[in-house]
Length: 315
Image (cartoon, rainbow, N blue to C red):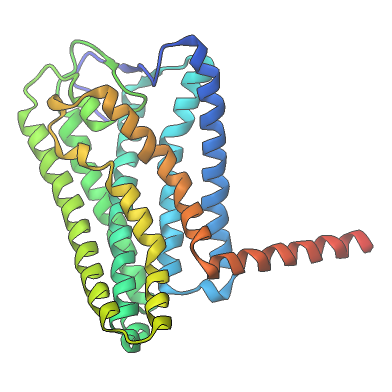
């Protein structure tokens, strides 16, 4: 990326400057990242290996797991390096790249959650047409469009942020190159940039929320019309995990609907820990604990592994 300013790198202040907290935080975030890595990649492998999980819902879930893994990997390793060896310097281009991938995966995640809500709507509201509505081709096209929109949104954000002049401080009051945190360092007028950020973020968040709310409104109406307790329970069980994930994710995205100048950076850092590290870790846990098909597939893989190990040891 072309740099029209005198800034060649940035300094990330990180989560805390208290020396006593550096090692405990490093250990905690290492464990969180390992759980995220194992949980999300494990979920993807589970879905690929078990033919019973080759359905639209699990196709979108595998994409969500991939996005969560990439999402966390964009931020967490740099945070861990800062805590362990004090490496808080990030180059201008590396900062732009980190911001690009962060915005891409954040946007894709919101659209994937919307697609998963639509999928649940199609399964519950019109079950007889589900297989013809949510075909493999339709699911693939919807997922691809989510990634395209993610890259488009990120490209606009990057251009909008790094067209500003950074001629004074290069210290970012954050643990990664977040858009509002970098914008606050600009010494040129950033009113238009902040407006574009708010408009884009608002559109992405509210469009995804609108799809989710409308989908669940129709699901709720359908559930109320059900006369059997079994059908009622089945409908709720298919939506419970997704609702939990949406609720967790939705509680921390509101901060992007404010101009950067009104942000409390300390508050943002706390919220950022949740959506960059904890949510990617929690998603596979939520879906595995609340889903009988995932638990059944996991038991099947464990049994196959035990059988294979036993066979090898015997021979």
